[in-house]
Amino acid sequence: MVLRKQNIAQMKNETFDVAIIGAGINGAVAAAALSAKGVKVALIDKGDFAGFTSSNSSNLAWGGIKYLESHEYRLVSKLCKSRNLLMESYPSTVKEIRFLTCIQKGFRFPPFFVYLGTLIYWLFGRFYTQRPHYLTPNKISAIEPVINTSNARGGFEYSDAYLFDNDSRFVFNFIRSSLDNGCIAVNYVSSQAADFTDNQWHITAQDEMSGEIFPIKAKVLINAAGPFVDQYNETTEQSTDHHHVFSKGVHLIVDQISASQKVLAFFASDGRLFFVIPMGQKTCIGTTDTQVDSPLSEVTDGDRDFILDNVNQLLNLPKPLTKADIIAERCGVRPLAIEGGSGGTADWVKLSRKHAIDVNKAQKYVSIFGGKLTDCINVGNEVAEIVEKFGMTLQPSGMAWYGESTNRTKQQFFEQARAIKLDTLTWENSAEPLSERFWRRYGANAMELLAAIKLDESQAELLIECAEYTRCEIEYAAEYEMITKLEDFLRRRSKISLVVRQTDLLNGKGLKEACEILFGSEAEEKLQEYVNSVG
Image (cartoon, rainbow, N blue to C red; front, side):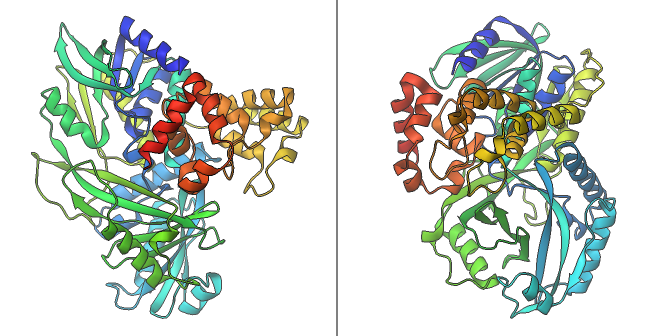
């Protein structure tokens, strides 16, 4: 909470080179790219960092294999290249995973024809991953008995990538990087208005927690408000070539369906890809693709029925999944960029997630439309190039603005972790050693965790029951991760509320103490705020 107050105070008193509205993936990478190049950046979001679309994805970084069917070969090539770059730059976070796909009888293409598509996809992916393999129904059953092959014609395995933790944690690490490079970022601050006068932007900002109104001044304004880009452009009276249409996507999280650690992929009853995605000791299933008119959406009984009906039909389960098996739900809208004026219709299954950036050079105003996690580094690079063309001086750097810390830093971390025998303190049911988890989540900043544990071994204890977060991690989050509401920590800096049932979380030990670490004297109030929000 101290960091947030300090950053708000600094925002009031400085003029920034660039102000960014929206701290989802597009705003986060824009801030990270610019701040790493010496640009003075202010970043605000009316909710939490990654608090909307960027925390409701499938947790996949994939090259867009489905776009082969619509012949968008250039897009597939670009997304595969982006995926490969993420895997290379974030080897601890973005990892290769096998997709086991089953093609049902009556599907619009025979399975071997679709398999040939995976070979083309592998080619577009520069052979960076394992090669695809064609599978007969018997072979599918032998590899993964949970798949119902009674109506299968065949299938195949191919590779893409996934985020080992969760999407919002991945986004926040760009925020953390930008903060380390001097960016002034604050969550729960909205832009109520913005006027371009005297060759700079004057933003009327509001602290959503206190209600305080204060000014922010910047030479360049970037609208990275995700699904709310059009709405904010109306506020700032901008005319753009693109606008958004919205598709709602829902995922349900249940107990682990398969221990194989493969993504099980099918074509659902509506014709789109349907995934059963490993999520540690849990499984994420979905998604839906429903046209909606507003960025604000919620899970309906129809969404739940669609997902449960499909998974029960496609898998051999000991007993059918019901709504009682749902641990958590993810619901968000995909902002899909299309050209032309507002309104209009689109083929929701075929419409791609490619991004578009519109520029008002006269007012130094940038609008970012669409996009996805896979393509995020390209967005950051493009925004930096645009800002430079506005006449802003960008400092050259010998290192990329993205990626994990250097191998030397990584080696030093693991040497220190071995010296204090960190991995012997790993929880017995953990999926990985503490050292690997710390490095993936915090990178070079994990050194602080080692120092805390070296002084006091109890800092490595799990504080919240059934959640793989240690005491020192919660203390680190309190100081450096701008936890403003309890949900920020439970849902976005971590994925605790996605994998632990709310009743178990609220009734289990440790949550109250975690609140005391995160919020001090406001702990009881913040806990009650969270209880009220989850109903």
